[in-house]
Each structure stands twice: as structure tokens, then as C-alpha cells.
Image (cartoon, rainbow, N blue to C red; front, side, top):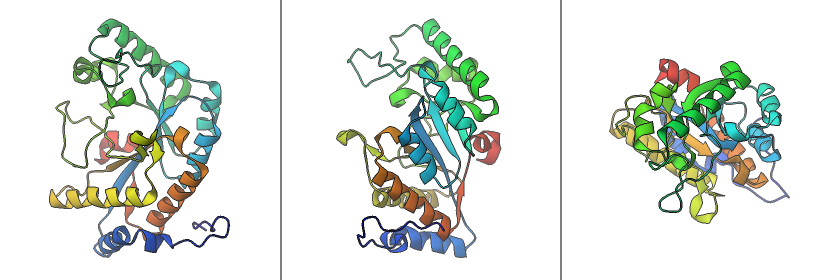
Length: 268
């Protein structure tokens, strides 16, 4: 059974009522044989935690890509990932250290850093993740804070990566000029003006509906919508809410969840 019981005896709206505009859109699409394509990335993994386990439970076994910090990797995360179904690994920088010096937005790879030093750190991280996770590792670079130097964006392919995963506005045809190998997220479920607090499932639903409306407008419905979470800042209540939202998407139908490997192999 996909639905979750009310917590503490408090009356709750049915998810189908709570997300009525999105549900109506999904119903229309299903009747027309159309689908929404989505993928899920979660950032900042390096060890096994209660928060990460809670999120993996809430995802209802849909594919999820964990952006792992290789320079901090603990074997407890290795064991958790190998014991979990439909979990892949991306490279989240090296040690998630801010080298900006406070002069700009946080960045592990600002223009001021030595290209040799950055290349060596990324190579070490990629090789470690390849060795540790094998086929679970997809060579995709996720820059911490979504901040990265221009030279690295222009040359990430030469460093062994098949794609870069950054952030993008709710616009399906956006390209930052780095070629076709961008696998970006559009909907960040964290509000960083409130220390990363969850924006709420209703707001996720609103943004998802807007993202799809833009795809309809630009005749690009097949372009997947990327969702981003940060498990470390999600409360048990947040995960319950996310779980109910995912459950609603599964029950209404016409949502196709893609793996990163599938996107890299041409499902785009």
C-alpha cells in the first residue's frame, strides 16, 4: 500500500486533493498517452546516516543519484549503497571545501585555483569512486554549490567525465554553452534563505507543474525534469511529505523516472 496513515491523529487532505492542479494535468496527459520524464539527485553523501536512510525509504524505490564527496568517503556509505536498489553515484567535487576566500559565492573550483591541483584532486576522486562503486558510479561531475570555473566547464570531458550536473532555471532548452552533456536539476527542494529548509511538497508540485507547462510551450516534453534534495537538512516530517508526494505521482501514473545512466546512454 502506497499511502501513509495520518500522523498523531491529525486530519490530512488526500494527496489527490492537496495537489489538485498537478493531478489534473497528469490525468489529462495519461488520457492522451503522454508522460512526464523526471530524475532525482541528492547531494552531500559521504557516510551512512539516519537522514540518508530515511530519504532512501521515502523515494519508494525509484532511481536516485547520490552526489558523493570522495575526499570524505566513509566505508559505511559504501556498504549502504551496495545494499540499496536503484542507487547510483555521481562525483560531488573532492572535499566540498570553499576556496573562494569569501570574495564571491562559495566554490571548490574558483578560477583562482591551480588547474593542475584541481585536475589532480578530481582525478583522485573519480578513480576512488570508480574503484569503490564500480558500475554504480556514473562519471558525472556535480560541482559543490553549483559553482565552477570556466576552464573546468570547458574541459571536464578531458578529465574523464561524461557530463556535468549543475542547476538551471525552469526552462527546458537552457544551455550554458558546454555542449550537450548537461544533466541539470531545475527544482531544488531546499530554501537556502532558511538554512536549507524544505520548501514543502505543495511548492514542489507547483514548480513541477510550471516546468512541464514550459515544456509544452517549447515542444520539449521529453526533456527530463531534475529534482534536487539534500538529505542532511530533511526532517522526518519532510521525508513523510516527500514520500506521500512520490506516492501520488506513482498512483496517478504517466511519470517516467530516469536513471543518470539511462540519460547518458541516450534516453534523452
